[in-house]
Structure formats: C-alpha cells, structure tokens
Image (cartoon, rainbow, N blue to C red; front, top):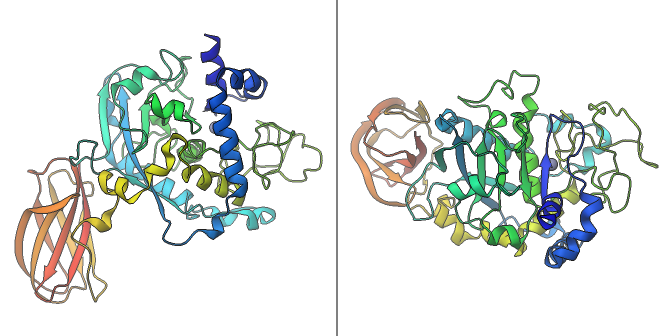
Length: 431
Ligand SMILES: [Zn+2]
C-alpha cells in the first residue's frame, strides 16, 4: 500500500480548486518514491534534460502538433446530459488557450508580456474510433464510479472504456473526480510515464461541471458565472499531461517548477490575481496569470513552459510522440487533409449549417458561389463513398434544407462541386 500512496502523490498531479491547500505532499515523498520506481525517476530526469535542451524556435511550420481526444462521459443516471456542443466548446477553449487566442491573452500584465507563448498545439475531437468506425469522439456510460476508485488511479472508471492511450488523449468525465464525496474538485492528470501508458490509465479525469460553455454545460462554470474561468481548468490538466508542474512546485526552492522564467511562488490561496501574500526572496512579481497557478485569472503559458511541453510531446516517454504522427492523425480522423474532398476554390464562399450539431434536419446557407450546376455529396470522416448525393442549380446565394435522420451520429463533410471542378467543403456534426 505504501507504494500506491507514494506513487499517487508523485505522478497524479491533482487540481482541487475548491480547497486552499495542496492535498498531496509531493516533494517530501519524492526520494522514497524514486527508490521504489527508479524507472520513473529516470523518465523524469530524461524529460527534464530534454526540456533544457529543447528550443521550440527551431521548429518548422510543418511541425504542427495535433492531439486527438476522446471523451468518456460517466454518470449514475444520465451521462448524455454532457452534450456534444459542450464537448466541442471544451475543444474550442483548448484550441484558444494553446494558440494564444484566448480573449484575455492581451490583458496579461505588461511585466510578463514578453514571456507569453503561443504553444502551437491543436486539439481535435476524434472522428474515427480504434476499430476504424466513425465516431463523435464521445462515449457514454451509466455507472457511479468516482474518478479515483478503487486504487487511487481510477482503474474502475477507466476500465469501463479506454481507447489506446498513445493514440488518443483519453478524458474521463465524471461526477466526482476524487474519492472524498466532494462534487466540486475539478480534475487530475498523470505526468507522462510509460507506467500509466502500459497500464491503460494515462489521461485526464475531469468534472463535468467545469467542461466547456456549450449547451448542457453547468452554471458553475458558465460564461456568466463568477467562476467562468473554471472551464479553462482543462487547459491546466492538459498541461500536466504535457509534463508541466504547478508554478508553485517546490515553492521558493530550486529548481521550482523546472521552468526558469516562472518566478518562484508560494501556493497562495490569498493571492487572488492581486499579488497579495508573502513573496519568495528576490521575487517582485509572481506570474499569477499562469495556467499552472490556482488563481481565477489564468491566461498564459511562458516560453520555458512551451519548451517543456513540446519536449515531452516529442519524446517516447508514454509514447506522447505517437499521438501526433500523421499515421495516428489519419487513424483517428484528425488529419482532415487526407480526406479526398479537399477544398479547391477560386472564390471565398461561405457555407453554414443550422443547427450544428445536427439532430435530423439541417438548413445549409451558402453565399458567394459561382452560379451554376453543382453536385452535392456528404462523406463520413473516412472519405470514400458518398452517403448522400444530389444535383442542384445554385444561385450566388441561397439555402438548401436536408434531412439527415438516416445518418448515424458522427462527423461528416458536405461538399459542393461545380462543373469547373471548384469544390467547397463544410464539416457537419450529427448528434
Ligand atoms: Zn494541477
């Protein structure tokens, strides 16, 4: 039992915003943990060294990192209360935060402006499952497991459904992330280790109350809530999965969080984005706007944090480097360019679908088309055979109504091709 308790403290980085203290004495147990699991120490030392030598500015534009995600939603009675719109909103938030597109990125206090980084990682809701079938990227399960039972690792809920952990980032959505009866802990994640990948336990456990802003999302983290920032805790958990520590890791002691440009900081429940509380010697300002702090104003990662995450993603530890290979992106439906319906257009046409996600019927509005005859096709994420083919004589602007009740839930592509070979494409999501 000692081993389990120690490893839990080291490798499962817990985020509990509802409490004002860290529930896990990571530092004091490190030494004995590494005695028990020397391979974990070697992995972490290796990743530290990799991060020290990693320079993301050497990356080329071709090295776009895309991470396929699957959500496994668990609930005792109604898992489908977590909607596709809510999940897509969560993906949108990740894509904003990891590409410096979050609305408050420009509000970062001036002293930290030059340290802000654009991580350049994109996230994709998987549209092909491990068997090669189309999927919405969400699985639903009725059970009352919390996120930890029975062993502290969440083996119960993770055993209900897990997709290969080196092919998908698995996110298990639950009602209760810890095993303590509280419904308001936000989530937790493992740092990269082969141990978790081999055991099919790698990934993130997350509270449905803090997931996204879309239809079905909770008033706890809704856009109008005083806790709206809680929907961005997933950004924090993903960063743990990418090997980041809290900025207050090791408090005022070297090496802190292993990133040179994040100031040393006490864990400061009182420092509510106002630079309150005691500071470490030599630190004038703490980076309380960092996603890896516990404050309600998260809006940036630093340059060193970027290097550390990209180093972990380029390493074979837990096979993080497999997630974003072209082969894996093709297999998970996240390499859209491979679908044989690539956009080819000389004019900037606009196509929208309402509603999206689609229930049964959908209205397609288009504008700025070249007038003429078009062949319209709908393909699934694998491309291949058209699932619905129609011919239309189209004006410059107009609308078409379609009945898609026959299609299974999943991600599809609607394509309009005219006689000149111009092709306009729209991604459709069917609930
Ligand atoms: Zn955390």
